[in-house]
Length: 323
Image 1 (tube, helix red, strand yellow):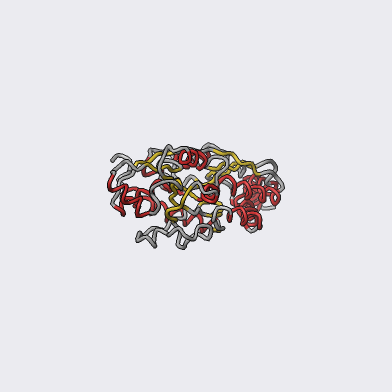
Image 2 (image 1 turned 90 degrees about the vertical axis):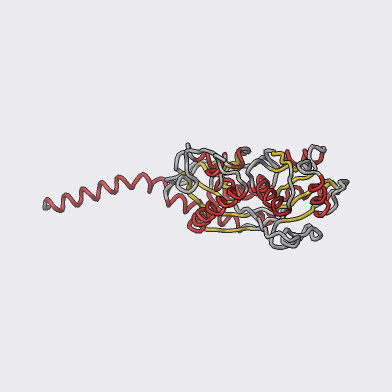
């Protein structure tokens, strides 16, 4: 064998040696349970629907996908957890919209675009504003009239500072010319307890409020989708009320930076199949949510576009850090 051929063979063996750990990881993946961290507390729409999705994915992957609830910090704690996790596919995180705005409001040492691997987008929320049924605020017009007559005294709860319900309500208040007092909570369960116990006058949230509306305890003043929700046909959309606002807050699943592409593909394919299972569609329907599939490439592009869009929202509200 010539010296040149020997060198070529040696180089090929070196490349194979470098590639083999990643190939072995992908071939054997998953060999143990996977942890999926979600951004909100147990019992709410995110928890219920993601647990169903995880259960479906477990059957496809042949290993349990275990949910860990990590509420707080505007829904960004799961993404922050990815920054210290091994890039092996065994730690995943829900990526709510708050992840794309955190860099504009808080000093962080990681980049939501560069330091997260976007696996798949799975759904989005149906939002609205609710008040107690016995509230004198029977309509959105009543809500606005009271807020104008009592600046800063109308209290509303949400699932946290700088979350989508909080920021969308503040944009809505700007457009309506009213000033509200925001009270943040860690999730839907806390927010529902607050409004039902009289701690706040209204709540802006996803449709985890549905059971309380159906039981006659709460009333829906508006919803935030393109069309009225089938479950609450009498509640007008923000567009019907004259506001140029549609908000569904899509979210999906991310992995640590550097996760091997073969592992990302296995995860993507499993969760895509899990999304198509009727049990997941039914779980979403409980909260007027719909499947919203985006591939890894599409989700990555969505992240880049959303970071720019959220920057404009933060600046419009004067919430950028340093201001």
